[in-house]
Length: 196
Image 1 (tube, rainbow, N blue to C red):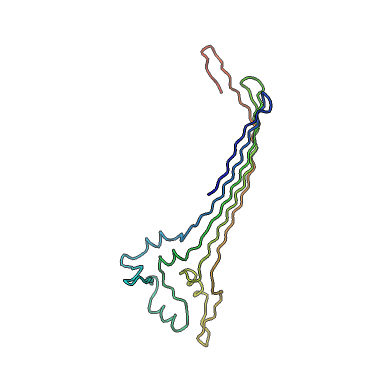
Image 2 (image 1 turned 135 degrees about the vertical axis):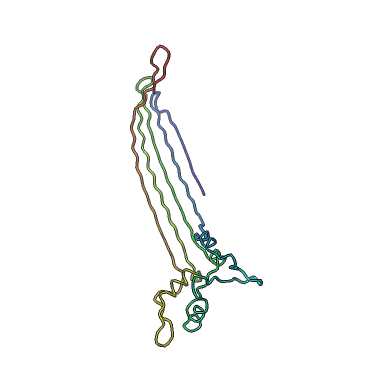
């Protein structure tokens, strides 16, 4: 994260004051594998993530493993087993945010204790998220498999390209604020009561 913040007050006249505020923030977040919490929660207690040799062990709990292996062997479907460690390693999910804010204000003292105020603010927020699902991740393999159809010759026809999948989202917002007001700050009464 990188931030810039600058505030300045200039007395233009004895009774006139100019205030400025410039703020900018730039952030870049690596979001990682976002559904990891629910995957861990739904993991069976006996489900291994690695075997004794250190090789990844895939979870086939959501479907019949033997049928899945048959579909891989007979037709060439991609393996639909899932391993959380592999999913974390393959995750490529990044968010970039840029936020600009510029404000300016004038304070004019009409009389002692009575002032007029005018403020203007402009703000712009840009947010970009890019999630690249690897062709080797579980969700991508599952999606490509679900759109593949075996032909009469036994070969698969892929209706989706076999590769990474890009999920891109963008959010832009702008705001303008104009505010004008009067401030009265005087003491009234014999006991010096203070009213604002």
